Amino acid sequence: MRIVYMGTPEIAVPSLRFLAESKHQVVGVFTQPDRPKGRGHHTVPTAVKAVAAEYGILVYQPLSLRKGEDAAAAMEMLRQLAPDLIVVMAYGQILPKVVLELPRYGCINLHASLLPAYRGAAPIQWALLNGETRTGITAMQMAEGLDTGDMLLKKEIPIGPEETAAELHDRLAVLAAETLAETLELLEQGKIQPEPQDDEKSSYASRITKDMSQLDFTRSAAELHNLIRAITGFTMLDGKRLKVYASRVVEHVTGESGAIVDPAAFVVACGDGNGLRFVEIQPEGKRRMTAEEFLRGKTLTLVEKLG
Image 1 (cartoon, rainbow, N blue to C red):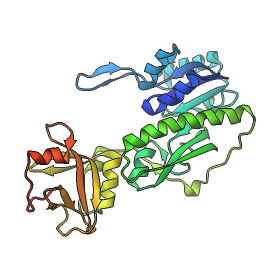
Image 2 (spheres, rainbow, N blue to C red):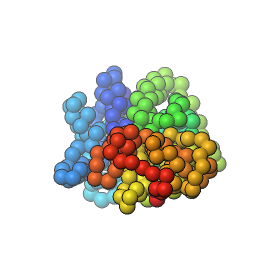
Image 3 (tube, rainbow, N blue to C red):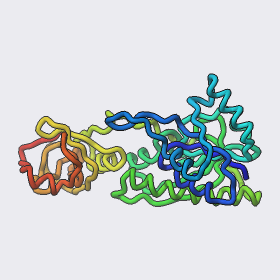
Image 4 (cartoon, one colour):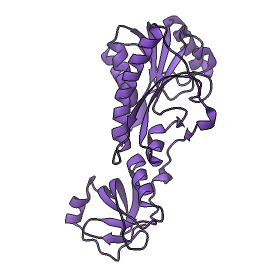
C-alpha cells in the first residue's frame, strides 16, 4: 500500500520504522514544524522528521491542515501523493474531513489507551495518575470527533506499580508498531471488524499543566506516588524547590501531613496515615540524584516539614 505517515514525538518513531522497513511504500511523512528547544533555543527537527530523513522519505511540515494557505498546499500535496492509507500517531493536529476521506482505506490512528478510556492528549499520564493497572494501544478508524472513531484492534499490557510515564511510554511505542503491523495485515485480508466506541464509558485525558505537579501531603500516599510517576512532583524544602522523580509508599506512619517522619529514609507523612519515601529527587540548582546520595550531604530532622 501507498502510505502517508503523520506523527511528531518519540512515541511515533517505532511505527514509522516498521512502515519504512515493511513491504509498504511510505510516500510521505507529515510532522509538526521544527521548534526551538533547550536553553539555547536552537531549532531541532521532530523525532519523526529525523527518522524519516534516515530512510530518505519526503517530509512535510504544514502549520495547519485546517485553514490558510498552508492547509491548501498540504491538501494538494496529499492529493499528489495519492495514499491508499494515512497512518497517524501523536501528530498533534486535528485532521479535517477532507483529509479523512481522501485515502481509499481512510485514516487509522494509533492511540495510547484502551479506548474509549482516556481520549485526548495525555492518556499515558492520566492512566498513571488514576492508578490504572492495565493500558494498551488502540488502532482506530479516524472520524471527525476527538478519538471517537470505530476501534479496529486493541493490544493490552499491564502497568507495573512503580512504572513511570517514561518507561510506559517506551513500551507503548513498541506496542504501537506491533498493533499497526497486525492491523495492516487484517486490513489487507479483509478481516477488519470495526467496533463502535461506547461513549458512556469514555473518559478524557486533558493536557498536563505545571500546577498539577505540586505535592499536597494532605492527599493519600498512593495518590501522590501515582502523581510522581506520572508527571514528576515537586515540594519545598528549606525554602527551595525539590523535584521528586521516584517514590514508594510506606504503610502506617505517624505524623502530621508533610512532616518528615523518618529522616534517615526521607519518608514524609501523608493524609491517609501512610507515608511517601522519596527515592529519586533533584534539589533546586543541583543535578538529579537518588535520595540516598542527597542524604549523604544533608541531615534531615523530625521537626522539618515539606510544603
